[in-house]
Image 1 (spheres, rainbow, N blue to C red):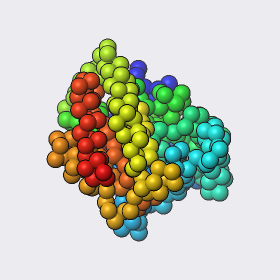
Image 2: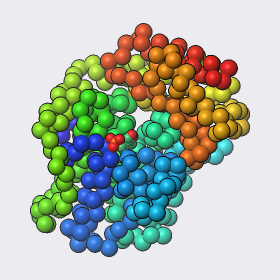
Image 3: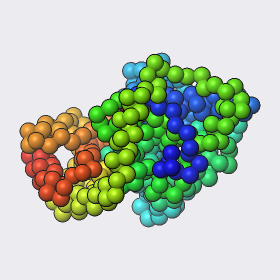
Image 4: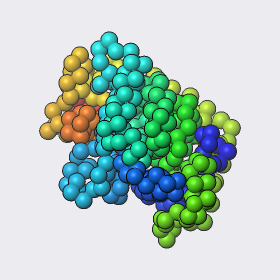
Length: 358
Ligand SMILES: Cc1ncc(COP(=O)(O)O)c(C=O)c1O
């Protein structure tokens, strides 16, 4: 726990990312019951986010395509805009003004729902599967933290994909200079080998349970599984060895520079973004207008196939803009990658994109 952001000092171990989110949502709700605010019942998250596939996680997730057929059985949730500067920061708008506009939107939503009725705001510090490695603009999370504090709303950061060293710091939110109330992690926590996830929580939340009912009304057969705990402990030990995060940062910068050099001028590459070894490329039909490629072409699927043929596993996805339009490619190579291997990724991805788009 000494690695966690300030104030986060307890952990609840589960078996994956969706379970971590489910635990976070129920923990947040029960926290308010424990402290005598049972009226709080609303959850706010962001459009174009992904938080997992179980019902609660799918409900807070903001991806229309993933939600559509399950909508009738999802618990009610509310969504505000993502922080997605490439698409939605207006011409001439400064990043600080964009951050302020989005924080205002969250505040307006809280006021609309009832200032004493909102449980939590849920967000990925760097949006992974649905947007393709999109970090927030500077100041965004600081302002969001302030809005949450103003109304006693808990801030839940989902670091299932972007956490555990992926962006060059153990927790992605370290780079935002804020502490959430709850953090979810998984994926990298088991190094990809062990099914494990965790919901990390603040002492304030833990103490409310301890001094209240003394019991979190949740659990699965495999919570706190000793083998998963041992594997996660070893992964964290390896991840925090001297030089590991330095490699993520150095190779991440090399990957970014390589992608910019190879693809920065490609007529269908609109944006190259990300942090550490978490990088995304957004593909467009027209760089000037940012017009997306025709969704019927399923460019992302073609690139996936072309990359596989070249021995490169990457994560291309469609629906980047609104769940239907837009294509991106997400890259998340191992933390121990070498410079030669980074260059190989750039080369193979460039070949794949050229094979599909010319
Ligand atoms: C940000 C985020 N949250 C939650 C999940 C769900 O994790 P899992 O697939 O382990 O249930 C994912 C999975 O991709 C994710 O990217």
